[in-house]
Amino acid sequence: QVQLVESGGGLVQAGGSLRLSCFASGRTFSSSVMGWFRQAPGKEREFVAAMSWSGGSTYYADSVKGRFTISRDNAKNTVYLQMNSLKPEDTAVYYCAADIRGPLSLRRSAYDYWGPGTQVTVSS
Picture 1 (cartoon, rainbow, N blue to C red):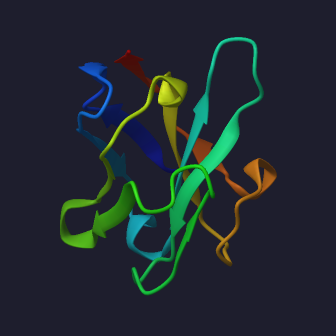
Picture 2 (cartoon, one colour):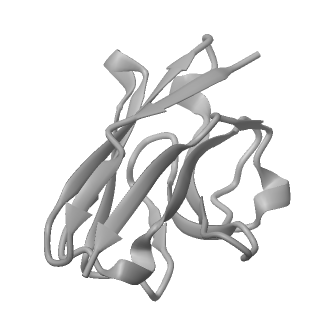
């Protein structure tokens, strides 16, 4: 069993930065693929970024590539999403997710556990 809690969301102006954190309880964190997804009002939840258990492999959505960086600290059971050059279209609820089986995937259905989400609002 893995429980996830996101933090770090908020209101920021376009061009600004935010760093999201996701703390995971449970012994399987260090062996889990970790991902970030987001859902804007009236839209489907979409993939943002994912990282393998070792941190050696990453995937990014084209819309965030070059602006967002996923990282993890297995000693702290925490995964991060550094978001730079934010745009109004990045406004969404951001969710952390854990895939305890792997391999690295961008499909929502691959992820077993989800956090409650944190709101990110980017003003123009």
